[in-house]
Amino acid sequence: MTLAPTADPTTELVVLLTEDGTPCGTARKADVHHTSTPLHLAFSCWILDDAGRTLLTRRAAVKRTWPGVWTNSFCGHPGPGEEPADAVVRRAVQELGAPVEGVEPLLPNFRYRAVMDDGTVENEVCPVFSARLAGELHLDPDEVDDSRWVDLAGLRALVAADPQPFSPWMRWQLEQLQS
Image (cartoon, rainbow, N blue to C red; front, side, top):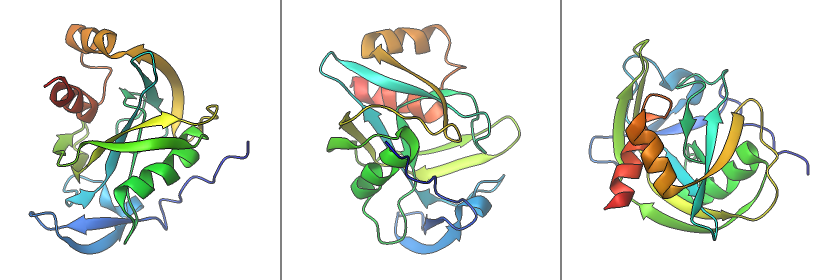
């Protein structure tokens, strides 16, 4: 399988949002993540399988935000005018090198703000989806350093024992998915 090219952060646009979630402009992805990151649109996806497992990925060490941490299957940013569910389908091929199917909303109103140790902020309205893998993984090394399948109960135990190796958004999503 040929990997879809990774989106170029110097040209990729993210959708900026007002406090009530209304689109109000765009910014280059390369310019948006800093110590005063504006609110913007994103998405998060959990790949699930029939055995009740989810695909965890470790963010590549070269990533601008939260490099090297374990997180849910993949995340990204819809482009201007792109529906988040369509961005899930597009981004799965870019990041995981595999198509997905059965994209379903899990937490359509998820929003978070997180600050890295260096002061870099994530500030996103981030609908959360589930999907099924529809092909073999061919991970993009610029996006993902590693992956593993974990059952949800085991993931909850891992996070409870030591939350540090996991992205803050994944931990918060996992809490909300329990209820």
